[in-house]
Image (cartoon, rainbow, N blue to C red):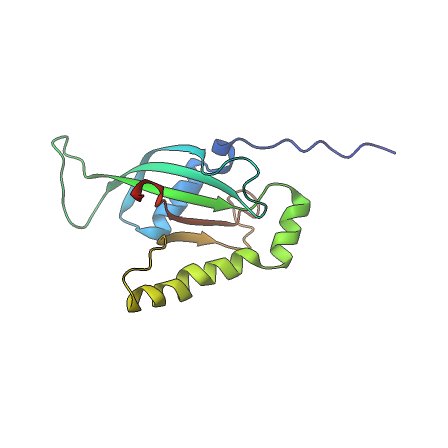
Length: 155
């Protein structure tokens, strides 16, 4: 009996690629164009069973909209993103997708939490920037993700 193929974990930059961040920016604000980004773990290893979390610092240039031109002539913005994605293990992916965890969480961030914030300004939750759920698009062969504001630096 042959041994099963060895599962080789991907590095953060193999998961959170330039294409993925460009897609997040396009979904969040089409006037933003990616200049650069840095990725680091968003949580400690083993903290999450249903996801991999990455803190992403993005530098983007605004191509239209309110002008805040810098001395360099560029309108640059720094965006802090907490990027939550499905684990790479195929068995865990199937378990997570069959239970529709990301779909439910996407509904929470896009439909339910915004209603609470309208009633009571004291509720703090991250703004959802972009979602790709149950996808099998060109990014990562079924790269489910939720990209939201990273509130870590806000206390």
